[in-house]
Length: 130
Image (tube, rainbow, N blue to C red; front, side, top):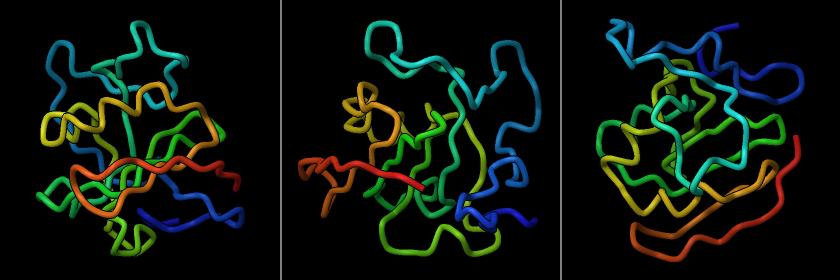
């Protein structure tokens, strides 16, 4: 399966996605499965996520998913995250540094999708299942 392709269950294949932090420096380890809820209701620095390249390139994050399997995905809400090469696995902190408003979503339980219409708009949460 190629980066961004969906499995037979409709799930993105984050293990096949490119890894943003390929050069390992002390403290740069990235983990996909970090126990939730997070201490202090803050995203841990070492939390990894599948993120659309467009978001990393400056497009606003308009969708955030805390999937039922405890993974995190961030999308621009416009493009198709399932297109080959559309997403990469990276530290979520890179997205949080660019848009601190996403920090409010650290308390979002697994199986929840957050959508908003524009940067700065209120997040609308709804249940999500595969």
